[in-house]
Image (cartoon, rainbow, N blue to C red; front, side, top):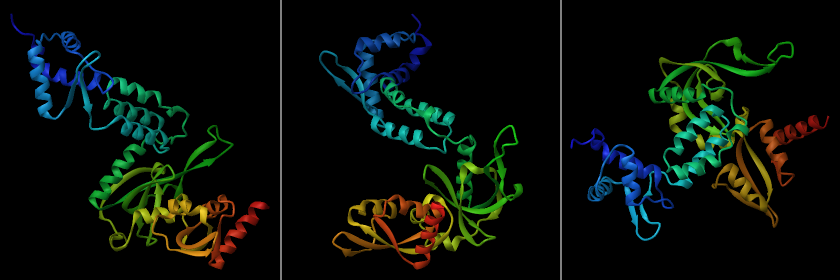
Length: 332
């Protein structure tokens, strides 16, 4: 009797079957395996399945056998364990820069890396529709384009927009291009994720400054043939993690060294914000002082205010005065 053409695919179907249907809590007995292969038109004997499973184990698939009632074959370890996939799903759900549509697509692809029972557990924790998401679907491709520009070490051009309110228009929230739609030209050096948004950190040759831009507000990004600028700034001493710590909410401003007086119980808050290499000094039994480099902005003042007086700005006087002025302006 001639064999079905699917017989040649038996090992692949078995591989797929074990990955999709089994995990440590879900196993397939020999009869289950034979029956499942039969639905693909594949006739197999027990002896050949034993040999195929041994071949898959030699290939690197972690197939285990649990004997006894309820036992059977299962995949014990995968490239991504279920807790790792849950962590990635949570990150995607919380990422405002990924649209709802793209979030759903990515989570579905992640679920395919788990067994079907595990995938259902992943889907049960998905609440994408209630999250505040960006409206810019192109951000997914913007990031890829920017990575290409960084790898190629070339300048880019793009348009940059902001959202504006116009009650006289049918669509009250409208896109408005900065510089009247004129192209920006910068040298891209890094991408960073801060406050649930993606930012491009770049060198602006015209202003001769390091600046950052919201990736979801960039459009029509094009790579140029010109080599990027700012190499001395970025290669000699630039640290993207330190840059992100100094810039609160990625708001621009003047970088200054600020002296803070803090209650001892808030050391964890300071460490989370500025890192573990803080130079601390004891002020009294209940307080310590620390100097930090920050970009002074309304967001920085809001952070200090939000700590309810437990963190105080003690120097320099100009920053103290600016903070007091912002408080007075808010009271008015």
